[in-house]
Length: 466
Image (cartoon, rainbow, N blue to C red; front, side, top):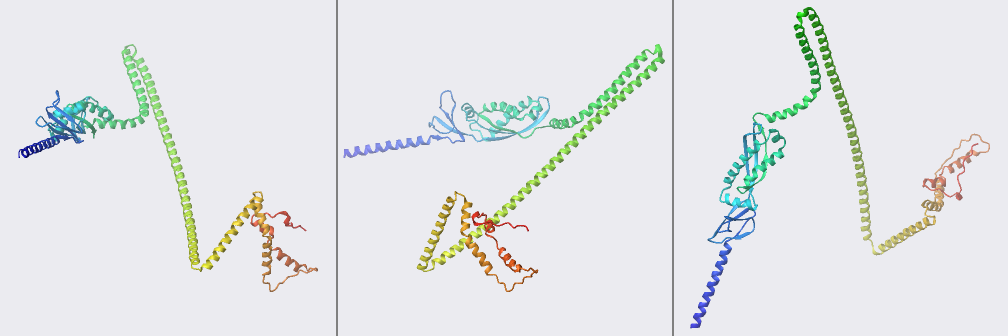
C-alpha cells in the first residue's frame, strides 16, 4: 500500500507539471503578437530605457503580460481636400489654390516613434483634421513667398516648394507626404487670366509694331515740328520789339517750312506703311501658293497610294482566284485518284497483281527514260538544247508519217482545175505540188518546238525570183 500511495503522488505531480507547462505555452502563444504589413505594432509599458514605446513594422513580438500592452496604428493612405481661399501672394494679390494631399503614417524609425507618441489611439478623422491644419498653414506660407507668375508657370517648382514646407511639419506628428496635386489656381482680380490675355495679345501686337512704329515716326516728326515752331514763335515774340514785321515774315516762312517737313514725314510714314502692307500681302500670297502646292502634292500622293492599293487589291483577288482554281483542280484530282484507288481495290487479286505489274513496268520505263535523258544531256556536253535536237531527230519519222496520213485521209470527190491554156499541162501538176507544199516542213515544225535541226538533215531552199 505505501508503494501505491507514492506512485499516485508522483503521477499527480507529473500531471500538474505538464498542465503548468501547457498553460505557460498557451499564455506565451497568446501574448505573441504578429504585425500585418499595413499596420505598425506599438508595444508600450515597460520598454527599453529612454523610450516610451517600441514600434515594429512587420514580423512579430512577444508582449509581456502585466508589464506591457500593445496597439496598432493603420498605415493606409489618407486623402485630404484642401480648398485654400484668398491666400496672399508675394505681390499682395489674393488667390485660390484648391488642392489634394495624400498622406500616411511613416515607417521611418524616428518618424514612426513620433506617430506612436502623438497618433496612438486617434481615429482616422482626427488624424486627417490635424494634418489639414498643418497643411493649411504651410500652404499659405508657401504662397506668400512666391509671385503669381512663379506659381502659375512653374508648377513643378511650386509643388517641390510645397513639399519642402509641408513634409517636415508632418514628420513631427509621425506623418509623411505621399503626393500633392494642385487642381486649379485662380484669383479674384483675374490677374492670372490677364497674364494669359497678355501673352495672347503680345503675338497680335507684334504684327502691329511696324505699322505703329511708322505712324509714331510721323507723329514724332509732326510734334517736333510743332515744338520747334512754338519755340521759334516765342523767340520771335521776344524780339518783336526789334522788328515785328520782320518777325512775322520769318515766322510765316518758318511755319511753312515746318509744315512742309511735317507733310514730308507723313508721306514717308504712309510710304513705310504701304511697303509693309505690300510685303505682308506678298508673304500671304507666297504662303497661300506654298499651301496650294502642298495640297496638290498631297492629293497626288493620295491618288498614287489609292492606285497602288487598288492594283494590290486586284492582284490579290487574281491570286485568290488562281489559288481557288488550283485548289479545286487538286481536290478534283485527289478525288479522282481516290475513286480510282477504291475501284481498283474492288477488283480481283489477279487483276490487281496485273495492274501493279503494269505500274511497276511504267515506273521502270519512266525511270529508264529519266536516266536516259540525263545521260543524253551529259553526252551532249550538258547542253539541253542539243539533247532536245537529238530527240527531235528521232521523231522525224513519226512526223513524216503523220503528214502522209493527213494527206491520205483527205476526202476529195472532185477536183476542178481551171487551166489558163498552158501547153505543157503543168497547172494540174502544180496544184498537187502546192497541196503537198502546204504541209508544214520538218524544219518549221522543229522551230515551233524551239529546236534547230542539224544541217545534215537538209535545209529549206530559198525561192529564186524569176
